[in-house]
Image 1 (cartoon, rainbow, N blue to C red):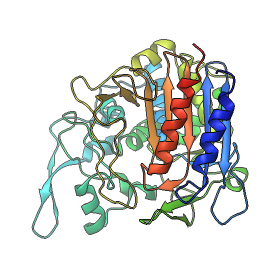
Image 2: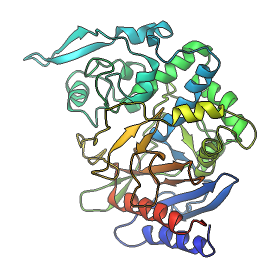
Image 3: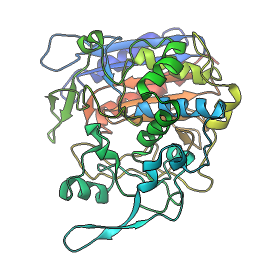
Length: 394
């Protein structure tokens, strides 16, 4: 990075954590191929509490979990233990029991029919299996509200047993696909997903603060969750929203981690699968996984269904975007400076990351605020990414 970049980053973090329209606290970092280029923290871990936000603060990672689960899937593909295009029920029979939702009867009972197509693990990684989320899909929200379907954030197996919204493979719909992909990994390995990740990803990368269940040390450093109210104020939320001992290790959203740990993961993707302490994927697997897997399909905006959980969400509106295994791809250069073909995604509590393999940099921005796409946190992240490219030594 250019001289002076640290002060530019620090100013963004400090600005976003002061004033009436602010975030309680933020941690952000930029990494290159050889190590961190910047890390910083500002604000408080939890409003009303004395602890300052620090670079080792622990966050509920929500959907930034997905890329790590996809990495575990790709490792099994490399080893010949998993065929992405075989029916996923060959590995996990219960996924073959999911039926397609055709509508609701007058009394609210779902009308279901057997699926004609098999769900494949590739579809799970691409979000084309037919699965959704209740906070982005009216039908799923109706199941939760009227049919006692457990919320996805309950961490329960019952929460995953939802009907399909369309015939597998025919559309793109963001949803619980990666939770099912994690169960496929468990079925093949005979181990819980967290154990697989610990042995095959976290240890080779040196990720010591990442888990589905927090250690006592992680609990002491946990950043508190907050709700942005309609008047713009912030209210602390009790607990982390995610269960401390989940029934299912949810591969789509269940990890707790730190920004520093996640940057170790980003760095491995920048370095063709080579981590700081070992290799997690082959270079050819990384090159395969970063390609658009949707053919002519494009990803769409995620609609606001439960306003307290998420606003309507779309990155770079108007820009065509596709999906890799398992990341969003911007198909044109982004206004932040991120080049076309880069990888990125986010987590529900306003966590954001990007991976630019062309320039060899990536970054992570972490807050703990609902609803998703909080204007203050989102703009802070975009300013942060823009500053990274403005200060990038060419």
